Image (cartoon, rainbow over all chains, first blue to last red; front, side, top):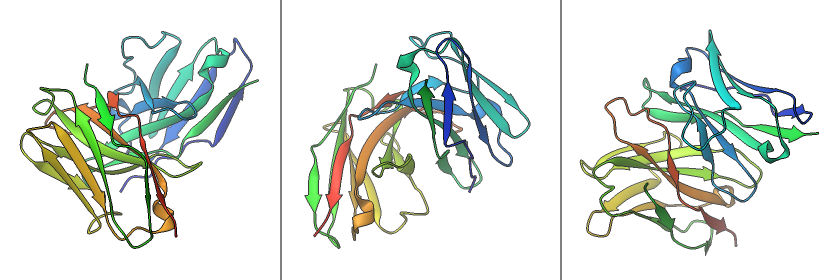
Length: 108
Length: 122
């Protein structure tokens, strides 16, 4: 099945831009979903199908893609953006969902 | 909006089984797949399997094949996940999550339960 690779951690100063990557062979970036998880809470969907944003998610959150890599970008980062971020894809070859290992975002 | 309410925490012995429930909003069974995702302490998310209750379509992750059973009771709109032959490595928070049914199976997990802590310890 697919393997999704994320950096374990990303640090960013308040007001700056954070970028979190998700890489994998044969990744179809417009099928990537992104979740934010804060300690003790269930994950929350922040980007779906690569670049779509659910209602209620700030416009500061955006998604993009390039060959074999999807990127979650958070602009004008605030302290409330701290948490773990996971990418997810559906592997149609093995009929399984796959999550990336997660990236811990720290706001300095 | 679909709400998912899970059963309470469980403490089990190694080599035993655990069954966790996830009650979905009325009317949701015809619209969504219910997935099970677990998270060991300090670790990432791991998909275990899912069910589309309307058609009783079930998929399991290869990692858990043979050890997991997912079922649905349409009369109570409740999905169950049973995991057998537990080891301490199965200690984790188990989430149910719903995604709208589509042919591709790739729609995002829009709704999540609150999580159920399962502890497998002697």
